[in-house]
Length: 183
Image 1 (cartoon, rainbow, N blue to C red):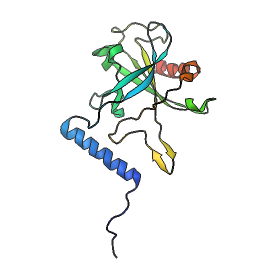
Image 2: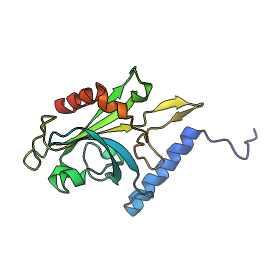
Image 3: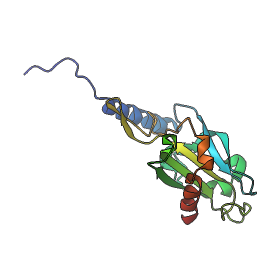
Image 4: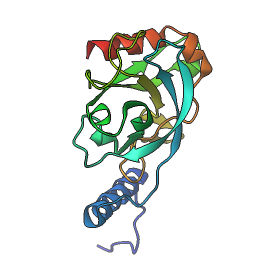
């Protein structure tokens, strides 16, 4: 039996191998081969002012050991929570929105809060301490004959570039906050 000189590699295998290479690079060097990205997030301020959309850069959290370290990089909340316990004592929830009246609201959302109760002010809006944040992520989906992965080639979560302003007026804001509060 004759073996062809080169076999086509399925895209999922290529993406897995590329991600493995990136993880090996990180293991060997202690750093990721790519820099942070900028994304849009909803900030729910602890002072009771209205929730609004802000831009945040991501920060590498692979080695942090928190519940969100599997994302590889997350929005950098340190300007709002501080660099010590406010940042280190954080929690995250996942919320999937389906069948919304505006299709742009459908998708995967992550909500973050800090549980450094003595370090941050009690929120007048959420019932927990410090600002809360909500980010829309890329959900795993099938499009154009291949899977769109929720992680990039470096094993980091992919965040959605478009965060609809309609989210602030929708019941989703309350649902995500309730889920975050119950955690």
